[in-house]
Image (tube, rainbow, N blue to C red; front, side):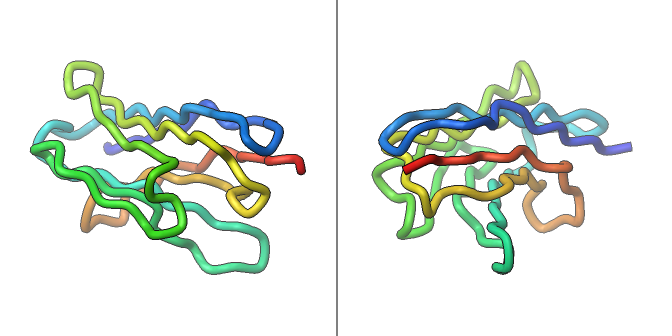
Length: 113
């Protein structure tokens, strides 16, 4: 059974940083691409960043240059380092296995202005 558990969210002031983690189990983690999504209240879920099994990365325009996705295959974990946070980054952040319906429960990121 595939499980994804996000952590690392919290309250931060605008301009601050957070690092999210997503621990995966029940799959051969290293062969899958991984995504980070976010969903703000009243908005659709938005793809934020992706990382392939080979470590190639892509970002939405809204976070490019501020967020960094990475992975540690030995620990079955994908990370999202978020710098220069803005109030509009406030959302629940979810990790997802590429091209799958496997999702974590999310972690809340709150950015105060």
